[in-house]
Image 1 (cartoon, rainbow, N blue to C red):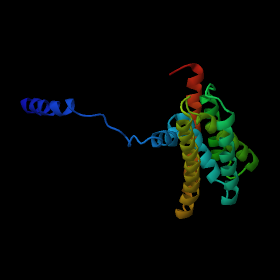
Image 2: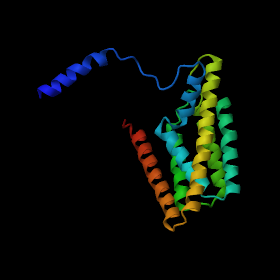
Image 3: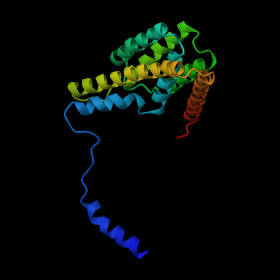
Image 4: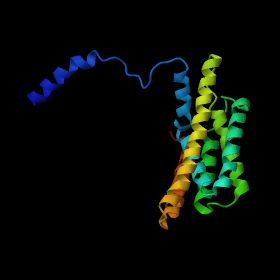
Length: 201
């Protein structure tokens, strides 16, 4: 007991003189870019929607998957230019997460037109969510660029992983595992939506 107390006393002066820690260097512009880069994954509704969309896109052939990515990228740009920071979109993001995950779980690789439409709507919502708070134009542009880059590259990696894993591990249970994962994500998004509607924090 005395030994532990002495240890705590020895560390106390060190803690008192500690300086603030920074996740990355405060270089002008880079801070805003990195904040934007992580923004699409900073809230559960956005992350769930992107995961669901990645699972859905990856269930299609590579040539068809490019349609999804193109529609997502195009509409994410449109969302930035026509959206508003005043819109509350968490419920819409969760509805999209539920829909994309449900399709990925029940009918993977089918309903191409519906899937492309969902990809476009998801891209638009991500674009709107990527609009930063008012501030200097250069800072806002850096943040927007980071957010769009993070969302589109993240979706590209999710799509690639969903295609690569079954190709590398040709077991019968792998596609089933993806469908189960999509079903669980859909259930999580549905629960979050229900709690949000009920007003539970």
